Length: 230
Ligand SMILES: NC(=O)c1ccc[n+]([C@@H]2O[C@H](COP(=O)([O-])OP(=O)(O)OC[C@H]3O[C@@H](n4cnc5c(N)ncnc54)[C@H](OP(=O)(O)O)[C@@H]3O)[C@@H](O)[C@H]2O)c1
Image (cartoon, rainbow, N blue to C red; front, side, top):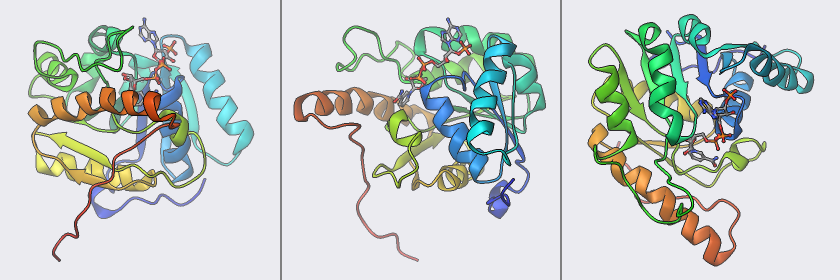
């Protein structure tokens, strides 16, 4: 295992569970965070599938600390949990792990895409997928929304990614921790305001999908301009 690249903001985060980490987006995060030195538990509905995903990473990088487990046990083992399943299964997946989430940060990457019109913004009545998650989980869980605008394909390739990550959440300290994790994954993260602002970030993904299609771009991203005053 490489040395954990954690900054002080995330010194308390050793183990990250990635629910649905057998898929494209979660697999990319597992790859990047495990290589940054975090202990990763890949979560799945089935133990065998989770273990197979972990084994695939270990075949490529034998020294990593990666295991697989069912979503609930993965959640129990983790200091921080990431939800990476399609929108249609967001709430049902959270319901299966809810008791084990109390006191933890949940990073929700969900984009409320409603096939077949994935290039059209279609936000849920509650405003955003992230707000739906926070509403279900309540005060015991701090939901932070991130990674909606990053292509999974880029995350799974070992090159710098030309896309920033807009991080929304109701608590600045929780956003701070997630921004440190974004940086550990090799990207630039920005405080993008409260969870209500996740609607704009989630909507942007459909805009990017439309840009990809029209301009034949393989995973367009967004970059924030401007120099922060120090
Ligand atoms: N792909 C991208 O480029 C991208 C970019 C930004 C954000 N996102 C968001 O990231 C999330 C995951 O996207 P993805 O492309 O990685 O999805 P995906 O590969 O299609 O699916 C991810 C995982 O979801 C789980 N899953 C599938 N059906 C399920 C069900 N009925 N109930 C519970 N879990 C189920 C599966 O895990 P198990 O079978 O192992 O349980 C699957 O491996 C989505 O919300 C998406 O909007 C994706």
